[in-house]
Amino acid sequence: MALNDIVFGTDGFRGMIGDKFDFKNVRRIAQGLADYMAYKSMKAPDKKVVVGYDRRFLSEEFAAHFAYVLKKSGIPVDLSATPISTPAISMLTEKKYAMGVVITASHNPYLYNGVKVKYSGRSMPASMTAEIETHIPKEAVSYSKEDVVKKDFRKDYCSYIKSKYNIGKIIPSINGKIVIDFMNGTAAEVAEELFGKYKNVIMLNTQRDPLFSNVGAPEPVEKHLGGLIKAVKENKALMGIAIDGDGDRFAMIDDKGVYLTPCQIAPMILDYIVEHKKYSGKVVQAVSLGYLTKRIADAKKFLYEEVPVGFKYIAEKMTSEDVLFGSEESGGYTWKGNLPERDGIITALLFLEMCSVKKMKISEIYAQVEKKYGKSVFLRQDYALPKTVPNKHSFAVKIKRKIPKSVLGVKVKDANTLDGLKVVLENDWWFLIRPSGTEPLLRVYAETDSKDNTKKLLDLAYKSAI
Image (cartoon, rainbow, N blue to C red; front, top):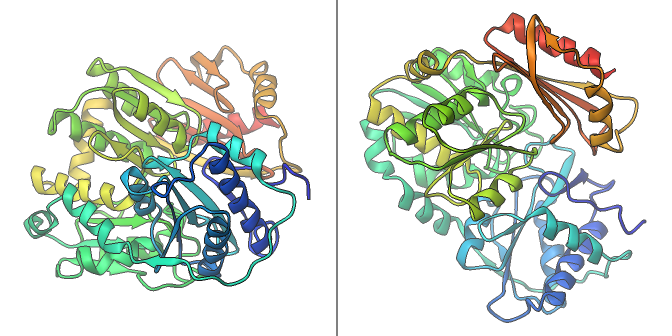
C-alpha cells in the first residue's frame, strides 16, 4: 500500500471493517504514533498513552493491537478495560496522559470503525496528525498477544461529570420526564451511575448492539430519532436527548416532539450562558452552522469567527484565544469552563440545568430565543457524486464564478471559500456547497426563516454545483 493511504480526516481515520480498516492498518497507525512520539522525545515514563474503544465489532481487539504496538515500541500505555466514550479519553489527556487513542467510527454505520487521537483534552491539531501520517510505515509489525495494563476509567469520567454539575440537585428539581437515547453507544457505559436512580429519567438503547438495530446508525439526526420522538410523545416528556455512538455529539427533541436543529440548539446554549452565567468572550463556530449565534454575538458586541468543518479547528481557537462558545453543525458544543472538546452528556446536563433554572419547557425556551433573534429553518442534503472531488478549494472557486449578484431576490453579501463555498445574503440567509473530500458526496446546507425558502435555496445551491 502507498505510504499516504492513511489520512486523518475531520476527526481521525475511518474505514470499512475488513477493508481499509483492518488489524494491519491499525498496527501501522500505532507504529506511526509511537515513532512520532519518539521523534518528539515523548518517551519518558510520565508520557503515557491511554487507549480506549467503542462498542463496535472487534473494537476491543483493535484496541489491543494498538496498545501492543505502543508497548513494544517502548511507549508506556494503559488500555481501557471497558468500552469508553471519546470525551472520557479526552478528559484523561488533559492531565494524566500525554496522548489518547479511541478506536471508534463515531456516528458512522456499523460497517465502519476508526481511530481518533486526542491531545491536551481535545482532538489532536491537524498539524500534528499530518506529521504522524509521515511516520506511518508501509508494513505493519507482527502481533503476538501481550499483557497490557488495563484500567476501568468510568469512575474517573463520572467524577469529572459530577464536578461540573450537581445532578442530584438538578434532575429532582425538574417537574417532568426526560428521555435519553444513548443510541447503543459508549455514553451508556455511565448511564446507570449518572441517571439510573432518577425515576423521571427514561433511558433508551443502553445495551451494546454493534448493529445499532434500533437506531439504524448512531448518528443523532432526525431520521434516526423516530423511537426517541415516539417516547417523548408517549411519556409527555419535557425533552428527548440523543447522544451519538462515541458520546461526543448531542441532539434534542422538544416537549412537543419536534426535532431541534443544531442551528437552533447552539443559540439556546449561547443565550443561556451569556444571560444566566454572565460569560463573555469570542464566539467560534464551523462554517456550516447558522446565523442566530452570530446575531447574539453581534448584539453583545462579542468577537465572532467561522472556521472549517471539524471540531479540532474550534479546539485550536479555544486553547489560544478567549473563546466563550464553540459549536458545529454536526451536534458538537463546548463553552467556557469545559475542555476544548464536545461532550454529549455535558451538553445534556446544561439543558437540564437550563430547564431547572428557567422553570420552562424546551419549546418555551427556544421561543424566547426566536423572539429575540429571529427564526431559523436549517436543512442539509447529501448528494452522490460520480467520484470524489480531489480539490475542494478549486471546486469551490469554480462554482463561485457562477453565483449571481442576488439570490431569491436578495443581494449576495459574501461568498467565501473557507471550506467549500458559502454564500451569505444580506438578510443572513445562506447556503454552503461542500464536497466530502474523502467520499463521492456533495453536502449542501442552507438556512432561512422558512422551510419553503430553505428548500428553494438548497435546490438553487445544488444546481449551481452540477
